[in-house]
Length: 435
Ligand SMILES: *Cc1c(COP(=O)(O)O)cnc(C)c1O
Image 1 (cartoon, helix red, strand yellow):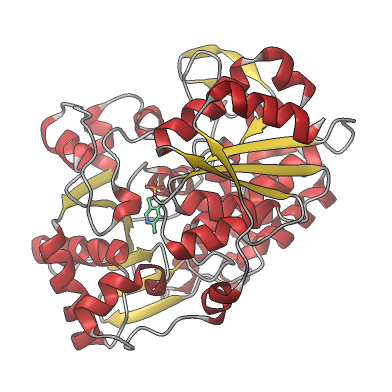
Image 2: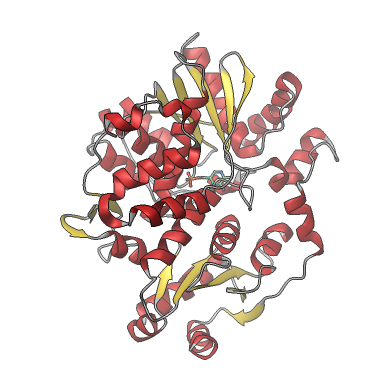
Protein backbone atom coordinates (compact mmCIF):
# COMPACT_ATOMS: atom_id res chain seq x y z
CA UNK A 1 0.00 0.00 0.00
CA UNK A 2 1.25 3.45 -0.90
CA UNK A 3 0.26 6.75 0.67
CA UNK A 4 -0.07 10.21 -0.84
CA UNK A 5 -0.14 13.63 0.74
CA UNK A 6 -3.42 15.50 0.38
CA UNK A 7 -1.35 18.40 -1.03
CA UNK A 8 0.50 16.26 -3.62
CA UNK A 9 -1.93 13.58 -4.81
CA UNK A 10 0.50 12.27 -7.42
CA UNK A 11 3.48 11.58 -5.18
CA UNK A 12 3.59 8.43 -3.15
CA UNK A 13 5.52 7.16 -0.15
CA UNK A 14 5.59 3.70 1.44
CA UNK A 15 4.14 2.74 4.82
CA UNK A 16 7.41 3.24 6.70
CA UNK A 17 7.84 6.78 5.47
CA UNK A 18 4.20 7.72 6.06
CA UNK A 19 4.29 6.39 9.63
CA UNK A 20 7.72 7.66 10.68
CA UNK A 21 7.46 11.02 8.99
CA UNK A 22 3.88 11.51 10.27
CA UNK A 23 3.48 14.92 8.59
CA UNK A 24 4.41 15.29 4.89
CA UNK A 25 6.88 18.08 4.07
CA UNK A 26 4.15 19.87 2.07
CA UNK A 27 1.99 20.16 5.22
CA UNK A 28 -0.78 17.95 3.84
CA UNK A 29 -1.89 14.69 5.50
CA UNK A 30 -1.09 11.17 4.40
CA UNK A 31 -3.94 9.10 2.94
CA UNK A 32 -4.01 5.52 1.61
CA UNK A 33 -3.64 5.46 -2.19
CA UNK A 34 -6.92 3.60 -2.56
CA UNK A 35 -9.54 2.23 -0.20
CA UNK A 36 -11.11 -0.90 -1.69
CA UNK A 37 -14.07 -2.61 0.00
CA UNK A 38 -13.10 -5.68 2.05
CA UNK A 39 -13.26 -8.97 0.11
CA UNK A 40 -16.12 -11.51 0.43
CA UNK A 41 -13.92 -13.77 2.57
CA UNK A 42 -13.86 -11.10 5.27
CA UNK A 43 -17.65 -11.02 5.53
CA UNK A 44 -18.07 -14.77 5.93
CA UNK A 45 -19.07 -15.24 9.55
CA UNK A 46 -17.69 -11.79 10.41
CA UNK A 47 -20.14 -11.31 13.29
CA UNK A 48 -18.48 -14.25 15.03
CA UNK A 49 -14.99 -12.74 14.77
CA UNK A 50 -13.25 -11.07 17.73
CA UNK A 51 -12.20 -7.42 17.79
CA UNK A 52 -8.55 -8.32 17.26
CA UNK A 53 -9.33 -10.80 14.45
CA UNK A 54 -11.42 -8.15 12.67
CA UNK A 55 -8.58 -5.68 13.26
CA UNK A 56 -5.97 -7.99 11.81
CA UNK A 57 -7.99 -8.66 8.66
CA UNK A 58 -8.75 -4.95 8.15
CA UNK A 59 -5.12 -3.92 8.67
CA UNK A 60 -3.88 -6.64 6.31
CA UNK A 61 -6.33 -5.49 3.65
CA UNK A 62 -5.24 -1.85 4.01
CA UNK A 63 -1.47 -2.38 4.32
CA UNK A 64 -1.33 -5.31 1.87
CA UNK A 65 2.30 -6.44 1.86
CA UNK A 66 3.56 -3.44 3.86
CA UNK A 67 3.87 -5.58 7.00
CA UNK A 68 4.61 -9.32 7.24
CA UNK A 69 1.44 -11.20 8.08
CA UNK A 70 2.65 -12.88 11.27
CA UNK A 71 4.13 -9.60 12.52
CA UNK A 72 0.93 -7.73 11.77
CA UNK A 73 -1.13 -10.27 13.68
CA UNK A 74 1.18 -9.84 16.67
CA UNK A 75 1.00 -6.04 16.46
CA UNK A 76 -2.81 -6.10 16.46
CA UNK A 77 -3.07 -8.68 19.24
CA UNK A 78 -0.58 -6.85 21.47
CA UNK A 79 -2.14 -3.44 20.94
CA UNK A 80 -5.86 -4.26 20.93
CA UNK A 81 -5.82 -6.47 24.02
CA UNK A 82 -8.89 -4.99 25.73
CA UNK A 83 -12.58 -5.01 24.82
CA UNK A 84 -14.89 -2.35 23.38
CA UNK A 85 -18.31 -3.46 24.66
CA UNK A 86 -21.63 -2.04 23.44
CA UNK A 87 -23.90 -1.28 26.40
CA UNK A 88 -27.60 -0.69 25.84
CA UNK A 89 -29.16 2.44 27.36
CA UNK A 90 -32.67 2.12 25.89
CA UNK A 91 -34.50 0.62 22.90
CA UNK A 92 -32.84 2.92 20.37
CA UNK A 93 -29.58 4.01 22.02
CA UNK A 94 -26.40 2.22 23.10
CA UNK A 95 -22.94 3.25 24.24
CA UNK A 96 -19.71 1.95 22.73
CA UNK A 97 -17.25 1.93 25.63
CA UNK A 98 -13.81 2.86 24.32
CA UNK A 99 -12.19 3.41 27.71
CA UNK A 100 -11.03 -0.06 28.67
CA UNK A 101 -7.40 0.53 27.66
CA UNK A 102 -4.55 1.44 30.03
CA UNK A 103 -5.12 5.23 30.05
CA UNK A 104 -8.93 4.98 29.96
CA UNK A 105 -9.53 6.85 26.71
CA UNK A 106 -10.01 5.78 23.09
CA UNK A 107 -6.59 7.22 22.23
CA UNK A 108 -5.10 3.98 23.59
CA UNK A 109 -6.26 2.16 20.43
CA UNK A 110 -4.34 4.44 18.07
CA UNK A 111 -1.29 5.04 20.25
CA UNK A 112 -0.70 1.37 21.10
CA UNK A 113 -1.00 0.25 17.49
CA UNK A 114 1.29 3.05 16.27
CA UNK A 115 3.93 2.24 18.90
CA UNK A 116 4.14 -1.42 17.93
CA UNK A 117 4.03 -0.68 14.22
CA UNK A 118 6.86 1.87 14.57
CA UNK A 119 8.84 -0.67 16.58
CA UNK A 120 8.45 -3.21 13.79
CA UNK A 121 9.15 -0.81 10.93
CA UNK A 122 12.47 0.20 12.55
CA UNK A 123 13.44 -3.28 13.75
CA UNK A 124 16.56 -3.40 11.55
CA UNK A 125 17.61 0.21 12.06
CA UNK A 126 20.70 0.67 14.13
CA UNK A 127 19.76 3.91 15.83
CA UNK A 128 17.15 3.82 18.51
CA UNK A 129 13.91 5.55 17.48
CA UNK A 130 13.31 8.69 19.54
CA UNK A 131 9.70 9.81 19.75
CA UNK A 132 9.08 13.44 20.69
CA UNK A 133 5.64 14.46 21.81
CA UNK A 134 4.26 17.73 23.15
CA UNK A 135 1.05 17.32 25.11
CA UNK A 136 -1.63 19.47 26.64
CA UNK A 137 -2.94 16.50 28.59
CA UNK A 138 -4.39 13.23 27.33
CA UNK A 139 -2.33 12.40 24.26
CA UNK A 140 0.93 12.31 26.19
CA UNK A 141 -0.40 9.73 28.63
CA UNK A 142 -1.68 7.44 25.90
CA UNK A 143 1.58 7.73 23.93
CA UNK A 144 3.76 7.18 27.00
CA UNK A 145 1.84 4.10 28.04
CA UNK A 146 1.81 2.78 24.47
CA UNK A 147 5.60 2.98 23.97
CA UNK A 148 6.50 1.81 27.47
CA UNK A 149 8.72 -1.30 27.05
CA UNK A 150 8.51 -1.20 23.22
CA UNK A 151 12.01 -2.27 22.18
CA UNK A 152 14.21 0.06 20.18
CA UNK A 153 12.16 3.13 21.12
CA UNK A 154 12.32 5.90 23.68
CA UNK A 155 9.88 8.72 24.28
CA UNK A 156 10.47 12.31 25.35
CA UNK A 157 7.29 14.03 26.51
CA UNK A 158 7.11 17.81 26.89
CA UNK A 159 4.28 19.17 28.99
CA UNK A 160 3.56 22.67 30.30
CA UNK A 161 4.25 23.04 34.03
CA UNK A 162 1.10 23.54 36.07
CA UNK A 163 -1.21 23.29 33.06
CA UNK A 164 -2.16 19.61 33.05
CA UNK A 165 -4.35 17.96 35.69
CA UNK A 166 -2.69 16.17 38.61
CA UNK A 167 -3.85 12.82 37.29
CA UNK A 168 -2.66 13.54 33.76
CA UNK A 169 0.73 14.56 35.11
CA UNK A 170 0.98 11.26 36.98
CA UNK A 171 0.19 9.38 33.76
CA UNK A 172 3.12 11.18 32.08
CA UNK A 173 5.72 11.09 34.80
CA UNK A 174 5.51 7.79 36.65
CA UNK A 175 6.36 5.15 34.04
CA UNK A 176 10.14 5.43 33.92
CA UNK A 177 12.12 3.04 31.71
CA UNK A 178 12.17 4.32 28.13
CA UNK A 179 9.81 7.21 28.94
CA UNK A 180 11.22 10.61 29.96
CA UNK A 181 9.03 13.53 31.00
CA UNK A 182 10.18 17.13 30.61
CA UNK A 183 8.25 19.71 32.56
CA UNK A 184 8.49 22.92 30.59
CA UNK A 185 8.29 26.34 32.21
CA UNK A 186 5.90 27.64 29.59
CA UNK A 187 2.71 26.89 27.69
CA UNK A 188 1.62 24.02 25.44
CA UNK A 189 2.49 26.20 22.45
CA UNK A 190 6.04 26.55 23.79
CA UNK A 191 6.28 22.75 24.06
CA UNK A 192 5.12 22.38 20.47
CA UNK A 193 7.57 25.02 19.26
CA UNK A 194 10.45 23.25 21.02
CA UNK A 195 9.54 19.90 19.47
CA UNK A 196 9.32 21.50 16.06
CA UNK A 197 12.71 23.16 16.42
CA UNK A 198 14.32 19.79 17.14
CA UNK A 199 12.76 18.29 14.00
CA UNK A 200 13.85 21.24 11.88
CA UNK A 201 17.46 20.73 13.01
CA UNK A 202 18.35 18.19 10.32
CA UNK A 203 21.57 17.09 11.94
CA UNK A 204 20.00 16.46 15.32
CA UNK A 205 16.94 14.90 13.79
CA UNK A 206 18.98 12.38 11.80
CA UNK A 207 21.46 11.72 14.56
CA UNK A 208 18.77 10.88 17.09
CA UNK A 209 16.34 9.29 14.61
CA UNK A 210 13.54 11.59 15.71
CA UNK A 211 9.90 10.90 14.99
CA UNK A 212 6.60 12.32 16.15
CA UNK A 213 3.59 10.62 17.68
CA UNK A 214 1.04 13.32 17.03
CA UNK A 215 -2.58 12.55 16.37
CA UNK A 216 -2.52 13.03 12.61
CA UNK A 217 -0.26 9.99 12.13
CA UNK A 218 -2.00 7.68 9.65
CA UNK A 219 -1.19 4.64 11.81
CA UNK A 220 -3.38 6.00 14.61
CA UNK A 221 -6.37 6.23 12.31
CA UNK A 222 -6.37 2.64 11.05
CA UNK A 223 -6.95 0.86 14.41
CA UNK A 224 -9.72 3.32 15.25
CA UNK A 225 -11.74 1.84 12.39
CA UNK A 226 -11.66 -1.62 14.01
CA UNK A 227 -14.14 -0.88 16.78
CA UNK A 228 -16.78 0.46 14.40
CA UNK A 229 -16.92 -3.04 12.89
CA UNK A 230 -16.94 -4.65 16.31
CA UNK A 231 -19.84 -2.40 17.39
CA UNK A 232 -22.06 -3.20 14.38
CA UNK A 233 -21.30 -6.87 15.00
CA UNK A 234 -22.68 -6.50 18.55
CA UNK A 235 -26.03 -5.02 17.42
CA UNK A 236 -28.93 -7.46 16.91
CA UNK A 237 -29.00 -8.44 13.23
CA UNK A 238 -31.33 -6.18 11.25
CA UNK A 239 -30.73 -3.10 13.43
CA UNK A 240 -29.16 -0.24 11.48
CA UNK A 241 -26.25 1.55 13.13
CA UNK A 242 -26.23 5.32 13.59
CA UNK A 243 -22.77 6.25 14.95
CA UNK A 244 -22.47 9.34 17.12
CA UNK A 245 -18.85 10.42 17.54
CA UNK A 246 -17.89 13.17 20.01
CA UNK A 247 -15.32 15.08 17.97
CA UNK A 248 -12.45 17.54 18.30
CA UNK A 249 -9.76 16.92 15.70
CA UNK A 250 -12.10 14.48 13.92
CA UNK A 251 -9.68 11.54 13.78
CA UNK A 252 -12.18 9.22 15.41
CA UNK A 253 -14.94 10.15 12.99
CA UNK A 254 -12.61 9.92 9.98
CA UNK A 255 -11.86 6.34 11.06
CA UNK A 256 -15.61 5.63 11.04
CA UNK A 257 -15.98 6.85 7.49
CA UNK A 258 -12.96 4.79 6.54
CA UNK A 259 -14.83 1.77 7.97
CA UNK A 260 -17.89 2.59 5.86
CA UNK A 261 -15.69 2.89 2.75
CA UNK A 262 -14.34 -0.57 3.54
CA UNK A 263 -17.93 -1.82 3.33
CA UNK A 264 -19.28 -1.61 6.89
CA UNK A 265 -23.06 -1.04 6.76
CA UNK A 266 -23.79 2.25 8.57
CA UNK A 267 -27.04 4.20 8.26
CA UNK A 268 -25.64 7.54 9.40
CA UNK A 269 -22.64 9.20 11.05
CA UNK A 270 -23.23 12.05 13.46
CA UNK A 271 -20.53 14.54 14.44
CA UNK A 272 -21.18 15.80 17.97
CA UNK A 273 -19.21 18.82 19.17
CA UNK A 274 -19.23 21.29 22.02
CA UNK A 275 -19.41 24.98 21.18
CA UNK A 276 -16.28 24.55 19.06
CA UNK A 277 -18.62 23.80 16.18
CA UNK A 278 -16.61 24.55 13.03
CA UNK A 279 -17.63 21.28 11.35
CA UNK A 280 -21.37 21.33 12.19
CA UNK A 281 -21.36 24.88 10.80
CA UNK A 282 -19.58 23.75 7.67
CA UNK A 283 -22.19 21.01 7.18
CA UNK A 284 -24.99 23.54 7.57
CA UNK A 285 -23.53 26.33 5.41
CA UNK A 286 -20.77 24.94 3.18
CA UNK A 287 -18.33 27.47 4.63
CA UNK A 288 -15.32 26.19 6.54
CA UNK A 289 -14.28 28.90 8.99
CA UNK A 290 -11.67 27.79 11.56
CA UNK A 291 -11.40 30.00 14.63
CA UNK A 292 -9.55 30.03 17.99
CA UNK A 293 -10.78 27.30 20.32
CA UNK A 294 -12.88 28.05 23.39
CA UNK A 295 -12.62 26.18 26.71
CA UNK A 296 -15.40 23.80 27.73
CA UNK A 297 -15.96 20.94 30.18
CA UNK A 298 -15.39 18.47 27.30
CA UNK A 299 -11.88 19.85 26.85
CA UNK A 300 -10.48 17.13 24.58
CA UNK A 301 -12.84 18.53 21.93
CA UNK A 302 -11.77 22.17 22.32
CA UNK A 303 -10.42 22.45 18.81
CA UNK A 304 -10.96 25.43 16.54
CA UNK A 305 -9.22 24.10 13.43
CA UNK A 306 -9.73 20.32 13.30
CA UNK A 307 -6.61 18.70 11.88
CA UNK A 308 -8.45 15.84 10.18
CA UNK A 309 -10.93 18.05 8.34
CA UNK A 310 -8.78 17.70 5.22
CA UNK A 311 -9.09 13.92 5.44
CA UNK A 312 -12.87 14.15 5.85
CA UNK A 313 -12.96 16.28 2.71
CA UNK A 314 -10.74 13.83 0.85
CA UNK A 315 -13.02 10.91 1.78
CA UNK A 316 -15.94 13.01 0.53
CA UNK A 317 -14.28 13.59 -2.88
CA UNK A 318 -13.79 17.20 -1.74
CA UNK A 319 -17.53 17.82 -2.10
CA UNK A 320 -19.70 19.54 0.51
CA UNK A 321 -22.75 17.59 -0.71
CA UNK A 322 -20.89 14.30 -0.34
CA UNK A 323 -19.82 15.14 3.20
CA UNK A 324 -23.42 16.01 4.04
CA UNK A 325 -24.35 12.57 2.78
CA UNK A 326 -21.98 10.90 5.25
CA UNK A 327 -22.43 13.24 8.15
CA UNK A 328 -24.93 15.16 10.25
CA UNK A 329 -23.55 17.65 12.76
CA UNK A 330 -24.84 18.87 16.13
CA UNK A 331 -23.27 21.13 18.76
CA UNK A 332 -24.13 21.64 22.44
CA UNK A 333 -23.03 23.99 25.22
CA UNK A 334 -21.74 23.12 28.68
CA UNK A 335 -25.04 23.79 30.39
CA UNK A 336 -26.94 21.24 28.29
CA UNK A 337 -24.05 18.80 28.70
CA UNK A 338 -24.19 19.06 32.49
CA UNK A 339 -27.95 18.46 32.45
CA UNK A 340 -27.43 15.48 30.16
CA UNK A 341 -24.94 13.85 32.58
CA UNK A 342 -27.68 13.94 35.25
CA UNK A 343 -30.41 12.79 32.87
CA UNK A 344 -28.43 9.77 31.61
CA UNK A 345 -27.79 8.72 35.20
CA UNK A 346 -31.46 9.20 36.16
CA UNK A 347 -33.02 7.51 33.12
CA UNK A 348 -30.54 4.74 32.30
CA UNK A 349 -28.45 4.48 35.48
CA UNK A 350 -25.35 5.08 33.35
CA UNK A 351 -22.33 7.27 34.17
CA UNK A 352 -21.34 9.18 31.04
CA UNK A 353 -18.35 11.52 30.86
CA UNK A 354 -18.80 15.08 29.44
CA UNK A 355 -17.60 14.05 25.93
CA UNK A 356 -19.96 11.10 25.71
CA UNK A 357 -22.77 13.27 27.10
CA UNK A 358 -22.38 15.63 24.13
CA UNK A 359 -22.78 12.57 21.90
CA UNK A 360 -25.85 11.43 23.79
CA UNK A 361 -27.48 14.84 23.26
CA UNK A 362 -26.80 14.57 19.53
CA UNK A 363 -28.33 11.07 19.42
CA UNK A 364 -31.44 12.37 21.15
CA UNK A 365 -31.77 15.26 18.73
CA UNK A 366 -31.27 13.05 15.69
CA UNK A 367 -33.89 10.57 16.90
CA UNK A 368 -36.39 13.36 17.48
CA UNK A 369 -35.88 14.42 13.86
CA UNK A 370 -35.91 10.80 12.58
CA UNK A 371 -38.32 8.94 14.88
CA UNK A 372 -38.04 5.15 14.95
CA UNK A 373 -35.04 5.08 12.59
CA UNK A 374 -31.81 3.26 13.35
CA UNK A 375 -30.05 2.40 16.58
CA UNK A 376 -27.76 5.14 17.87
CA UNK A 377 -24.34 4.01 19.08
CA UNK A 378 -22.72 6.80 21.09
CA UNK A 379 -18.94 6.48 21.34
CA UNK A 380 -17.90 6.93 24.97
CA UNK A 381 -14.41 8.28 24.38
CA UNK A 382 -13.16 8.36 27.98
CA UNK A 383 -13.94 6.91 31.38
CA UNK A 384 -16.01 9.35 33.50
CA UNK A 385 -13.44 9.15 36.32
CA UNK A 386 -10.99 11.06 34.10
CA UNK A 387 -13.33 14.05 34.52
CA UNK A 388 -14.12 13.48 38.16
CA UNK A 389 -14.54 17.19 38.98
CA UNK A 390 -17.43 17.64 36.55
CA UNK A 391 -18.98 14.30 37.48
CA UNK A 392 -18.87 15.16 41.19
CA UNK A 393 -20.37 18.59 40.57
CA UNK A 394 -23.33 17.07 38.72
CA UNK A 395 -23.88 13.78 40.52
CA UNK A 396 -22.37 14.39 43.97
CA UNK A 397 -19.09 13.25 45.44
CA UNK A 398 -18.44 9.53 45.61
CA UNK A 399 -21.00 8.68 42.90
CA UNK A 400 -18.35 8.07 40.21
CA UNK A 401 -16.07 5.17 41.11
CA UNK A 402 -12.35 5.57 40.33
CA UNK A 403 -10.89 2.49 38.60
CA UNK A 404 -7.80 0.94 40.23
CA UNK A 405 -5.64 1.92 37.26
CA UNK A 406 -6.25 5.58 38.07
CA UNK A 407 -6.38 5.28 41.85
CA UNK A 408 -2.99 3.58 41.93
CA UNK A 409 -1.37 6.63 40.29
CA UNK A 410 -2.12 8.84 43.28
CA UNK A 411 0.65 7.19 45.29
CA UNK A 412 3.15 6.87 42.43
CA UNK A 413 6.19 9.16 42.44
CA UNK A 414 6.47 11.88 39.82
CA UNK A 415 9.78 11.95 37.96
CA UNK A 416 10.28 14.88 35.57
CA UNK A 417 13.07 17.21 34.58
CA UNK A 418 12.34 20.90 34.69
CA UNK A 419 13.48 22.88 31.62
CA UNK A 420 12.93 26.49 30.59
CA UNK A 421 10.88 27.10 27.45
CA UNK A 422 13.97 27.57 25.30
CA UNK A 423 14.66 25.77 22.04
CA UNK A 424 18.46 25.86 22.27
CA UNK A 425 18.49 24.54 25.83
CA UNK A 426 16.11 21.75 24.78
CA UNK A 427 18.30 20.77 21.84
CA UNK A 428 21.44 20.71 24.01
CA UNK A 429 19.56 18.62 26.53
CA UNK A 430 18.59 16.15 23.82
CA UNK A 431 22.20 15.89 22.58
CA UNK A 432 23.58 15.36 26.02
CA UNK A 433 20.96 13.03 27.40
CA UNK A 434 20.54 10.82 24.36
CA UNK A 435 23.77 10.49 22.46
C1 LIG B 1 -9.19 13.14 21.80
C2 LIG B 1 -10.55 13.02 22.40
C3 LIG B 1 -11.74 13.35 21.69
C4 LIG B 1 -11.70 13.91 20.29
O1 LIG B 1 -11.32 12.95 19.34
P1 LIG B 1 -10.91 13.40 17.86
O2 LIG B 1 -10.45 12.18 17.19
O3 LIG B 1 -9.83 14.44 18.03
O4 LIG B 1 -12.13 14.00 17.23
C5 LIG B 1 -12.96 13.14 22.29
N1 LIG B 1 -13.05 12.68 23.56
C6 LIG B 1 -11.94 12.38 24.29
C7 LIG B 1 -12.12 11.92 25.68
C8 LIG B 1 -10.66 12.53 23.74
O5 LIG B 1 -9.57 12.25 24.48
